[in-house]
Length: 486
Image (cartoon, rainbow, N blue to C red):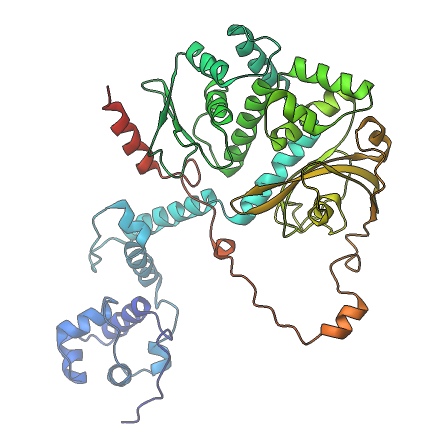
């Protein structure tokens, strides 16, 4: 017998092959025993092949095709031989999937006596479950779309949320807080007013910054603190989630929105609207606005002060602005604008992950030697001239610049308005800073071959779970262990 050339291992689907084999055998009115005898194997071996649980060798496939009076191509065709067979294949594949295994349901043994309607129901239910899981999964693109949607919401309201401001003010008044900066003690007073106790613990679940025990009304924070997050702000964010009555996020968009609102709430407590606006307006009257002063007066991070400025600048001072947090590689980590500055964006409008122009203040600041004081610069762009102020701060993942910018006409209110630093940006024109100059191209074109750093996270889906990235089992075990403490 002529043996066909070898086929690649993925040339056939074992389940589809098995159903086609069974269909062709039935058409020939052959029993398993009869066909097995013709091709020289046992009936049990042939049964495993028909059930898609054993891949036959090419010689056996050729012999089966000959015994059934068909061609090898027909036997290995990708389509199911009938609608019934297609349903059987769909159900069989569903039951072999990791998703089905995770449901811990018993397998359905498919026989000729299994009603077609039953197969339709099982296949339909599995398909719908898969559709809903895929719909709920937060892919990187879905996360970017959610970020775009949230940023548009923030832009529309000038990044100012009156209801959150009111809730924060109500709490401050309830604990008798005056004009002084909010201390750690005062933050604990707010928790106590709400009926909670604060516990600094070792062994906080690694995927969390805090854990709220609603049953025993406790806020758990890491004893050693969370890198990049001081305990007071972490506690106030946890309080915010409770006061704002946040429940499990419905999707990734809801998760992002909740995080923005709790961060806003914490900032409104640490830098109360009334006192902060009074401070900013007084500085504006002196033409001496400076983000670092806001940072120092209220004892917060520069990033928190910059965010808070964007909350209040438009609503209370009629001033549009933009904010950036940029990695030393030039990649935008966070951004906000309502002053029409042209941030780089992808086709869906996502800014985060894009590379900012190397002539913008947020990039130029990395080139100056003095990182103790803020760096100020005017930048001419296709959309107008902007004045920006920026600082550089370190993080475990590298250096980041934090910058606030305003249109040229607003620069007169800021300290550093008399800076002589000025640059020109033609981005998004690629000849601005994305393409090498003719001299560089002539010197190195075709003679450089860098090895790109592999970023595995670019291929991964966003973290799963009701609270993305949080290990729920670890959190529940932590709470169970803490509940046993006296």
